[in-house]
Figure 1: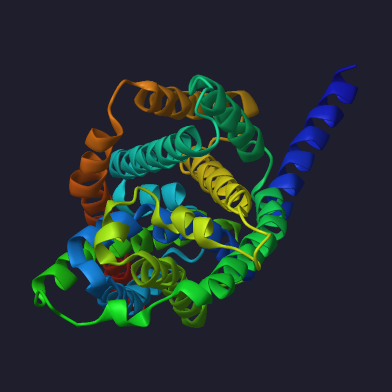
Figure 2: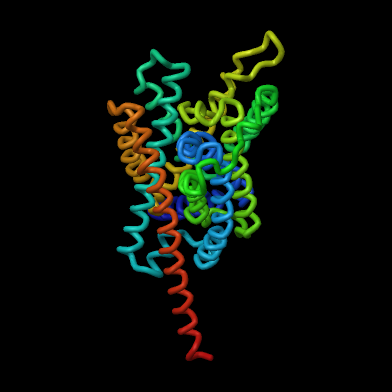
Amino acid sequence: MIKNGLIFSFQKEGDEKKMQEKDTITVFQMSLIIMMVIGLQNHVIVIRPLIQTAGRDGWMSVLITASITLVWGILILYIQKGMNQEHLYSWLKKQAGKPIAFILCLFIYIYCVILVTVTLKETITWTSITFLQHTPIIIPIIMMIILCILAALTSLRTIAITTFFLLFFVVVFGFFVAITNLQVKDYSLLLPILENGYFPVIKGTVYPGAGMGELLILLFLQHRFSNKIRYRNIFWNIIILTILTIGPLIGGIIEFGPKEAGIQRFTAFEEWGLVSLGRYVEHLDFLSIYQWLSGAFIRITVFFFISVEIFLIKNKKLKLIPLFLISCTAMIAVASPISDFTFYRILKDYILPGTLGFCFLLSFVLTFIVIRANVRKSEKRGPAS
């Protein structure tokens, strides 16, 4: 009986290790996940505050942000090489000590909580406004959270495969609305350029920058990659995210004008209201429901997954603890009687600038730790040589 028990336990441990080794994805699959996760942020959430801040020159803010991010991407690659694809928490414990590792990972967990809450709040607000006006908001909140938790408890590979199939139709519908609305676009609304000077353009870089900063998830999940990250991977991710931001931004301005687009709560969704095929085919905005819910589902799921993964929790029952905490926080915040106007002001003035600042600060802290680790290695090699 003892021998059988020992054999069973060893087999169980071996199976768990094999499962962990199998739960890897390619950098290409991670790029698809980034398109969905950050794409929802830059394609939908940041458009209104960007137009309100930079006006018709918002596209210039996006290009400036992209240029800065291309340089910042070198920093991400430097950190990733310094970590040598090791788990972030394990690497921090070795290089900075357990207390600092725990504190930094705790801040990353709080960051995930904020992003999940914002995504869920924006999604529920949109569904309540558009097609679930008479449904108590607690119902879609619970349904979305349960689905995302179940998905997060599977594996990163499962999430990547799901993303691949969902993203295909998201992209198809995106091209469909862009091409169909060519008949109502007025590109003269993009002129004059810099009518309010440079300052609004520079100030507007905060909002697409908040989305670009989420590229740090490459560092949070890089130990799950089956191949190494190259700068060209980061480069193309930034280019794609830039296109995903400029598309609905310019579309909203040239279809509605900068003033009207700045008033609209969800400009990207309003663009679907203009879609028509001839005289008899209209009201195709239901296709945007698929786009939004697919993006929200993958985005929340990935940040649920990171909130568990960041602390190296392997026990399935213990994984429920951080997921329960983040879910309760998000549910309370979303269901609280805060007006949409108040939430939007908080999002625009505090959350988006705050998350951008956190991403850049964390990247510089990690860079400092990598430099310190490299100096220690060189000092150890010195006497030997």
